[in-house]
Amino acid sequence: MRIAMNMVFATPRLAGGRVYCESLLQGLASVDRQNEYHVFTRRDTSLPELPGDQFVQFRAPISPRSLAWRTCWEYGVLPGKVRRGGFAVLHGMGNLSPTVAGCPLVLTVHDIYYRRVPDTIPLGHRLFMAGVLPYVARRAARVVVPSHWTARDLIRLLRVREKNIRVIPYGTGQIFQDVDTSTQDPDGVLQRHGIRRPYILSVSRLYPHKNVAGLLRAFGVLRKRGYTDVQLVLVGERVAAGHILDQLTHELEFNSAVRFTGFLPPEELRAVYRAAEVFAFPSLAEGFGLPPLEAMAYGVPVVASNAAAIPEVVGDAGILADARQADEFGDALAMVLSDCKLQETLRLRGRQRAKEFTWERCARETLAVYSEFE
Image (cartoon, rainbow, N blue to C red; front, side, top):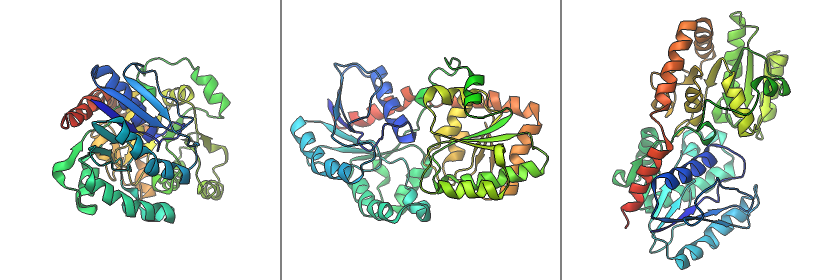
C-alpha cells in the first residue's frame, strides 16, 4: 500500500504531537517492510532517520508558525496531491485533516480540549475546531485515539460511531528510547539553567489547561509544610498567558524557588529528568499524558492529576490527586518527598508501567488499521 501521512500540523519544536508523529514513523519502520509512506510536513520540519526507499518526505511551503497558510495549503493543495498520488489511505495525524474522495481517512484525534476546557482556548481556534472536527471525525473511515477517555468524549460529544474508533495508546517519548544513557552531564545542565537539587519537575507547554497556576499554589502549600529547600522547575514553551504565571510567582514570593527554563532540547531534557526528585503533572485535560509516562520510564516518582485520561496512563504506579485543590496536591507532593520507601516503590512501579507502553505496539496496531483498507 501507498500511505499518505498528513503531518503538516506539527511544528519543528518537540511537543506531544510531534513526538507522536516521529515515534509512530520510527515504529512503523521497525515493524513494516512492505508499505510505502509519503510524509507531508512543514518546510522546516526534519524527520528522524528512516529507510529512504520506504519513507518519502514532502516539505510543504509552510513556515513554522503560519496558521492561515497552513490551513490554505492543507485543505486547498494536499487533497489534490493525495488524489494524484494514488494513495490507499490518508492518515491525518493531528486532530484535523481534509477528506479526499476515494481515499479512506484514518484520523488521529489526540484530544478535544476545545470542548472540555473551552475557556482556555482562543476564540478563533475554538470556533474553527467546533466547525471542522466533528464533521471530519464523523466522515473518517477510522478514528484513532490514545485513551478510552478520549474515545468516550468522541462518542458522547461529537457523536462519532463507536465501531469506527480504535484505541491505540502511545509509547514513551522518542527522547526516552534509551533511558539509561545520556551524553549530557546532569550537573552541567542544571547549573546552566539555575536548577539546584532537590527539585520537583513539571514538563508541559504553559497553556491554561495544563494548570501550572494550580501547581504553583500547591507548591506554596508545600513550602508552608516546611519544604523550603525544594525548588520547582517548569520546563516548556511559554504561551500568551505566561505573564500571568510570572505575576503569580511574584505574588507568592517564590523568587529563585521556581525556575522557568522554557523549551529544552532533548539532550538537556534527559538530564533534567534524570536528576529530578519528583515529577508533578497537574493538567486538567489530557487525551493521554506523555510527560508522566516519560518520567516513569526514567524511574522518577510521579504525582499527577486524577483528571481526564491521566489515570489510564499512570495507573497505580504514581500518586493521583485532585490538582484543582492546592492543599490536596501539595500534600501529595509532601508525602512522596518525605517517604524514601514510597519513592523507591514508585520508581520500580513506574519503570514497569512504562514498559507496557511502546511505540512498536502503537505502530503494529496502527498498521492493523491501515490493513483494514487493503
